Each structure stands twice: as structure tokens, then as C-alpha cells.
Length: 346
Ligand code: SAM
Ligand code: FES
Image (cartoon, rainbow, N blue to C red; front, side, top):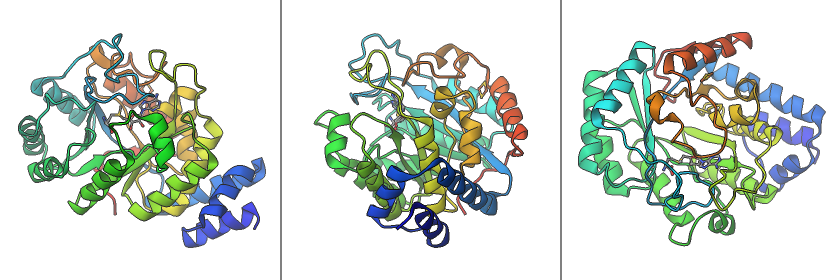
């Protein structure tokens, strides 16, 4: 089968065999890449028109009990300057965000036991009581089914938990032995069952990744059918075991965004900050390849630089208002428009 035929099959049926996905990723030519891009952009346009949803990202804490080898806030990084946002600081971020037009708040952080269920439920309840028309997305790692259930009852709408890689051996290469792909997958299925709009995802170009493991990621996404998917290039952080590993590539990340869009026409697919970090026009390219979401940072400016997952992260010095203006212009320049609706999965 030729790459072009696989692209057509994806566009028409949203499905492909594992071997076909591997073949496409391995052999796609620049001309075929443009074909794929155009098909993905057109699929996104069909689902969302020229609308781009925005999510206000609030980075709660960079304290983490985990030790993922790729991540700058891993517990073994003694150089990280640690912080936690108070309930008041979080609410103040939401207040700023709301006045800037955000109707989704994403509370993301390391796995930090300080934010236990009582505290997190209280925070979620307070945000939902103050801004009933807003969605709350959590991205707080693996907390267990009971915790997910309590947070859902408190009003959380969505949960982002990237699976990172769907290949067992690759997962073990990226994480210490106490972490398991089995738990990750079980968490994701539990989140879906509880009624969360659930987000999976992975880094592109992480050490040990192959076209075969990427095909496994795509097959897993098809099995889970998440409502959201976060993908962005791996970027090394200087104080991690992967400091000397090369970053993931722009082209491959864009190809995968397009493939994911064709396989999941309605999925909420962000053009990530990591993509904007490896290339100045990365986020615009992400949108032109089928993404439909951007996530400007709402975290307090004084802590931005400390939520350092990878080196040279962009927007760490900008105020939220500046970020949204900048992104708004970037989207306008490519014919898209940032909208203030909640942007739920339909
Ligand atoms: N603790 C939560 C979790 O594990 O889902 C949320 C925070 S975690 C830092 C958010 C995401 O950052 C991870 O899922 C991972 O894919 C991404 N990330 C971490 N280190 C990265 C790196 N060096 N390059 C690119 N992305 C990275
Ligand atoms: Fe943050 Fe451009 S999006 S400054």
C-alpha cells in the first residue's frame, strides 16, 4: 500500500492497521506530508470552523513525588526551586483568567500530596461556585479511582493524563520501576468511566521511541477514544538523566498531530507550548496541521520559570494578558480566531 492510499483511508474511515501507520510514519515524503496536512486541517475545519479554543493553564505546584527520567520537576532534581500555589493564589489566577475571557481553567501540577482530596475538592468547588459557566480541567497525575470520583463530584469536568507511551518496554525506559503503564492505562479508563472528558497523549521523540512505539500510541488512542489528546516534542532538561538526549522533531510532531486529527475528527487537540518552544512558529504550524486548542499560561509570573519541565520553555516571563494578546494575533495571522466558549467535546 502507498502512503497516499493510507492517508485517504484515514480521512475516509478514521482507521488504519498498525503496519500501515508504521509504513506511513517511516516513508512519508514532503509532498505526501502536505497532502496529510491539508486533509487534517480540513477535518479540523469541518468540526470547529476557524475557531480555536483557549484553556488557561494554572501550574499549581512543581513538587512531585515521581521521578520520571525526562521531567525537570522530578523529585531527584535538587536544583529545582520548589513552590506551591495557595488556594487564594489559584482563585486569583482564575479571576484574572475570567476577565481575559477564559472559560476553562486547567489546574496542572506535579504529584504533590499537599493537594489532598479535601483541599482539591474545596478548590474545585469554589471555582465552580464562582464561575459556574466555566469548565475545570485537572492534570494532577495518578490519584486513584476514589480520588478521581470525589473530584468529579466536586465539579471537575475534564482530566488530562498523558499515557506517555503505550509500549511497555519504552515506558520502563522513561520511568523508574515503581511506575507502570498498566496503572496509567487503568487510570485513563477509570477517568473515562467516571464521565470525565479525558485526555491522553505522549511526547514525540522521547528517548527510545520508534515508529513502532508511535504506532502503538496511535492504536491505544483508538482503543481509549479520549476526548482530548496532548502531544508535543520531548525537549531535554539540563538537570535530568536525559539532559544529553536530542529533542523531538517539529516535522514528526506535526505529522502525528495530523494523523491523530484524521483518526479522531472531533478530538480536542492542543498545539502545545513545547511545539512553540522548538520552533518560533510551532504553535501556528500545529493549528495548520489539525490542532484546535491553545493553552496560554495563567500562572503567577513569579513562579513561571520554576515550572520548568524542559529547557528554554517559552512565555515564562509574560503576563497572562500579554500571552493571550500574542496568541490571538498569531491565530489571526493564519486565519483563525480565538473564542471564549468552554469548548467541550461534542
Ligand atoms: N503530574 C501530571 C502528570 O504526570 O500527568 C501533570 C504534570 S506533567 C509535568 C505534564 C506533562 O509534561 C507530562 O505528561 C509530560 O508529557 C510533559 N513533559 C514532562 N517533561 C517533558 C519534557 N522534558 N519535554 C516535553 N514534555 C515534557
Ligand atoms: Fe505567551 Fe506568546 S503565547 S507570549
